[in-house]
Figure 1 (tube, rainbow, N blue to C red):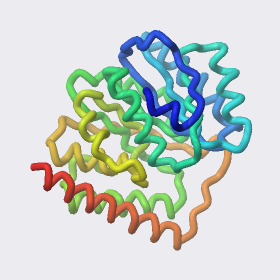
Figure 2 (cartoon, one colour):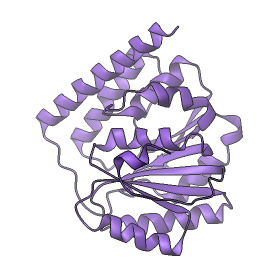
Figure 3 (cartoon, helix red, strand yellow):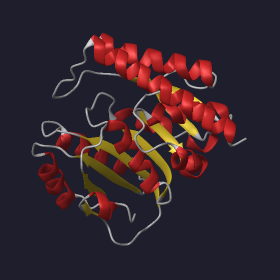
Figure 4 (cartoon, rainbow, N blue to C red):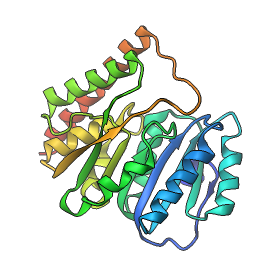
Length: 254
């Protein structure tokens, strides 16, 4: 966990206990939903009797997100706050994976927008012993056309470069066995725009035992995401180029 001193304040348990599950939540300016999201995940994981930690990575929020999380920590010590300078959604997710893959048997990543709720997590958790990689496949998706377009381009990139192991390649609702993916986390470049896309490709490349589970998708609880056509094109090109370079890296390691 030494990298935390370099990127900002962290409020953490001191016992370094190895847990069954580390939940990774990247967050940016979600003061309107963060308390609800944390409480609902706490309730669900407690109901499932899981030994867990919730690692919230605050990516330089400019609102009261950090203060609200600190209040929630007072009621539940399983919540761990990592405050860091803003670097973007993808690099924040990757940092969460890299800092916790030796702390928990399983990693689960979900976004802070509450578009995919904790009430469906049991479907993934209950079949974990038979798989290494369990991905929520979004259906009844409420995202904008532009966001769906980015997902489509990412899916095509992975299928062409790695094969069709996962359909919803960038879904932020994924359960991964830490030991299986540790090497992958370590070799993904730190500034990667969409590390979940590369992870999906890596799972296909290495024939990781994978399954997708349909998970309902709903509208954001608060806030909004605005994407222009130009930004969609730019980010799709960026994601494809990074995916292509990652495949080249894997080939060079063979």
